[in-house]
Length: 233
Ligand SMILES: C[S@@+](CC[C@H](N)C(=O)[O-])C[C@H]1O[C@@H](n2cnc3c(N)ncnc32)[C@H](O)[C@@H]1O
Image (tube, rainbow, N blue to C red; front, side):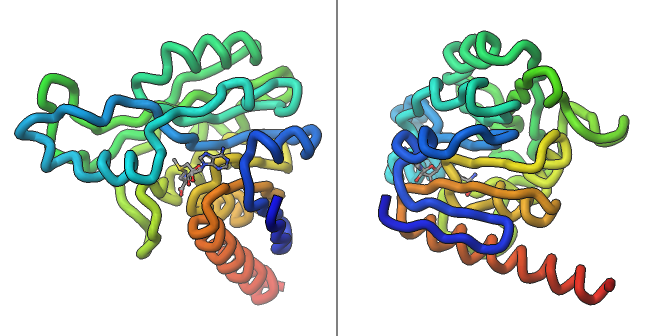
């Protein structure tokens, strides 16, 4: 492992989560948007509308991940995004590990206007799976299985698959537990949402460029949170 950064309630590891996760012990929740696994060829005349898929492939984010990293031995609950083509393998894994799960959706209000021989890319599925004691948190209005939000970055963030903060804030609000880990941290959106909501965050990212972006965003989020707390005191 080459670097660990601790910034207030957040600890970030630069390295491979397959090496680092086994050293971390038990954590309440894993909330993650891991590398997708999909076929990047094809698209025909619609290929021009799929430039983002080329960027994802160029960053090596089309090769999937080892599902066994999401274990009920280590985590009380798991909230995981995945590509359409991963669910046939990932859902049976989560269902075998965790006794309860819900299939939830982020509906994009501004999907790319392409469909070709498939559906519009207007929905991303995430699954929330949990052990007893880690059921979804929140009051009735927060317990919707979907969120409506535009696709797009909150600011100029140099990463091909940044999740909107609005989506991650909704998701963190549904987590029971103080400690939240994102082993595929990317630009750190899960961490920004976690520290904004007063949770402890543990992030892992193997790419130094994305690691630095995540540390900067999480530091800013925490500084802003502390400023508002102090101003209110
Ligand atoms: C889909 S992106 C996450 C994007 C994130 N949700 C955001 O909002 O920025 C997945 C990230 O996992 C990282 N990654 C892939 N394999 C990894 C591994 N074995 N260990 C740690 N990080 C890894 C990639 O570099 C990439 O930044």
